[in-house]
Length: 85
Image 1 (cartoon, rainbow, N blue to C red):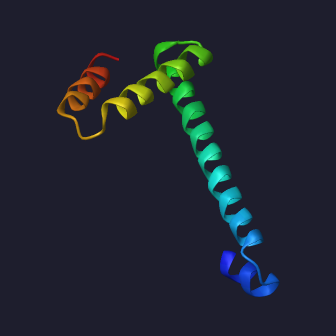
Image 2: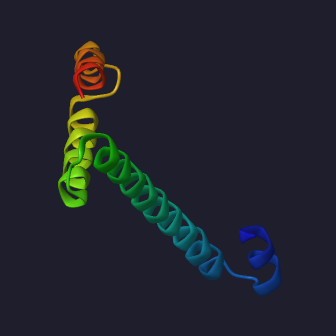
């Protein structure tokens, strides 16, 4: 689609706008659906409140992101979370 817009309208401005818009919308819709579905799962499995579940998922994702994905400690934390929850 961005290539078509460049050929049709002859500039990079609308192509750039459409690319950025598609990126932002994809990121926000993906994150919101993942958080909501995870919160529903935690609500059904553990009986947690939806807001508490979302905050817990965001905190867990932040821990993984900040500490790095290829770290061996993350695998241990992830295993413990799966095993005990």
